[in-house]
Image (cartoon, rainbow, N blue to C red):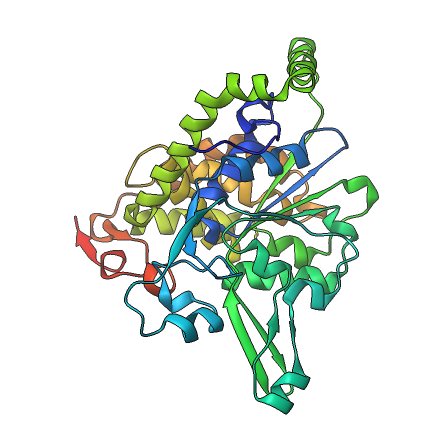
Length: 377
């Protein structure tokens, strides 16, 4: 593990366990769809996001690509890289740190998605693309502070790219595409306004953070920050073994995520829970499954269990709960494990339904034959 930037170590953050876990699970599987962190000022939201980027394993990229193209996934390459190396056997590569891109609230659409030079295209027949923020963030973290203050149209663009994993820019009949797979981390203070329900639903996970009330933990926060400010290098050296261990654990979970299986009864359980909690649409069902699979991989298991599903529900549901008559459901999240067991008993263990399946959610060359096969119990 190479030397990390001078940021506060992720593992040195006191408390906020659910927030840190939500970030780690997105790092294991970027297809989950990002996380929205809501809370008052000074609760470590931005610190955690920046620290996660420094923690992510280094990645192999096409050497001269401004899009961090993955040499192992040619079907996701940007148009430029595909034109250069479509018929080349040995593509030049290098290793790079995962990017951390901070999106300003004032960002325009062109700054986010990039721009095509129409004049060059018409006069010289050249396709010239000026990369935007989405290009810079590919395979890394795109961080949006005060996301509730961002223009709704820009938020839509970010969420669409995060969901599809690709950015396509079209102008005057000319188009350019490049990969845009990133961990979208949005933070906000609810006291300054909320997101529209339609946009809230597009964030896969959400966590509400509050200031720590325990006096001893607050003292620990003070002591660690004082030590960090007095000697950053010494503080990072002290925390390096724990950081390195977590970095390797994330890398190992990434390697095995495609082998994590689930049963048909797991799917029935997830769907029934979402229906009982009156969650609109079907996005939450898929988010719960993906999050459960990522947590199983994080724990080193190749199949999901009820603990994974319960955690996934706690992360995927809070911002999707209906208000009004269902307001009390927020308190029910603390009883998810019991609710799952009751639902499991209600559904029963139909042996004919206990077919174990490996994930078929991958796109591109991630969806290998091994990710499609089924094994009957």
